[in-house]
Length: 227
Image 1 (spheres, rainbow, N blue to C red):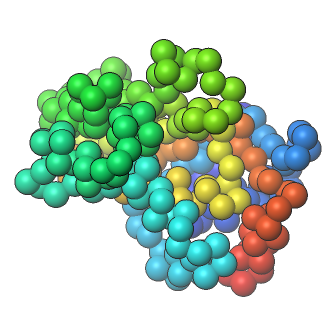
Image 2: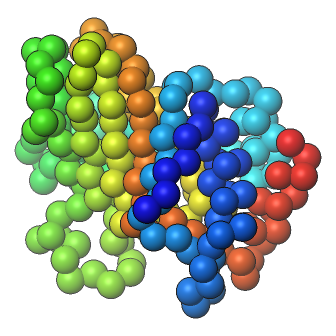
């Protein structure tokens, strides 16, 4: 296991990409490292990096992550499951997005609401977890529809929230920054709702990889050159 320490989501993408390019093992069509942790110290989104990433990769992936991993609800709609879910995707079922599973598990349970209630207790809990992977619906899948994000663990300590996202697989080239971007915003949102401070956001990837056989790797190298 190796841990990368980064200040922002953009910094996390740069350091992780560079590390994988230098140290990744060739597995099939991937440059891969197992059990890579990426710690992000602030929720700040660097506008310069964000603009250059969008220039190279386009807006689609980041904006897509904002509707799959996290979308900030309005104050009036947050505790209304139906409204907050419809803000995400009116056509999707509960299982189609990470956020849908977190706020409407099997169309019944709002894990985010429960997480905020627990965080407001201001206790050093070890049991605040939001599940994404569902063995009943996902256990027989081999690829299509299998969520990459398995769970989000929340550890409130000394008035700060440490959030860890557990990925079975994370493709950094195009998706990594979108993941980091959405996760720090999710952490920041939970902190604001529960009255505690941002501590650390960690993305832990069991398979962290780059795809070398398409334009994503070429674009990643191009972005590193212009930063």
